[in-house]
Image 1: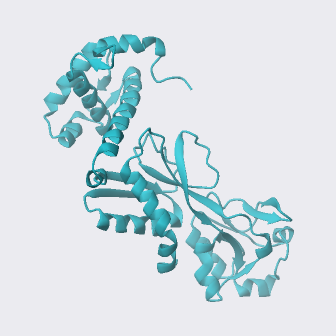
Image 2: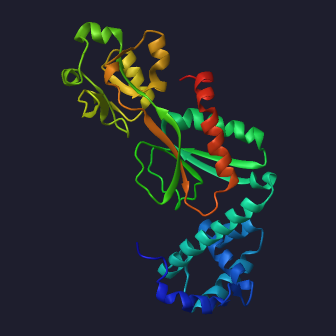
Length: 327
């Protein structure tokens, strides 16, 4: 991976910013200029950044101009409609944003527990786990720690945790991003089922291969696109075919209850319908391993206490939340 700033230029940057050997700085104003620049980029404008920092717009503009003079390069492109960093500015922003985040995390780690659990916690999640249980856990956490501002976003979009400024994201299945830390907080068993009326009209498949002769309700979202089974200890992958597709778990459940076809969904979606006899599970002996559910977070040197607290709370309470609030 190419470094954000060429190592050959590190000494040049250090000298221009006022760093001297031993890790000190000639003038603490350089830190303020860098911090001002980072906040302006994050806010997208001098006006919004000034409002957030509770300083004047001219004050921020002066600091960024000083930084550009120190570095001898333009960091921001300003027009009447927008403000965006130059290529050099984007590199400097990414490096400094990471450094300030590390510094903030280190200070939070050293602070008292009450101070640690203040500030802003941003969580992004998808599907029913997010809509039902992450949201409920966040509501309870807000009551326990009213000084903590919690922001929960539910989306099926693939979110860049670092670039979009989230503290925690909920992910399913295999994890591919090695730049993030992760903790498994739950596991989702999947169930294949359909309405009794469907089996009465079309017969009941007894093997995975026999599913090919049936109308399967297809999920248009990961990890439900491919159906996973285990036959004689070996994983089997089945690509369902059918006349009905949706990117919504509840919509697939509704179609199954109405007798449209066979679905394979996480157990939490269908358990109440199975208990009521509206759906009948099949191929139970071929169930795959439960799908792991992870909470991932930035791989910083210091993990903020608010992040550790929320992950612990969710992990310790998810079973209670599911039992208290079945879908």
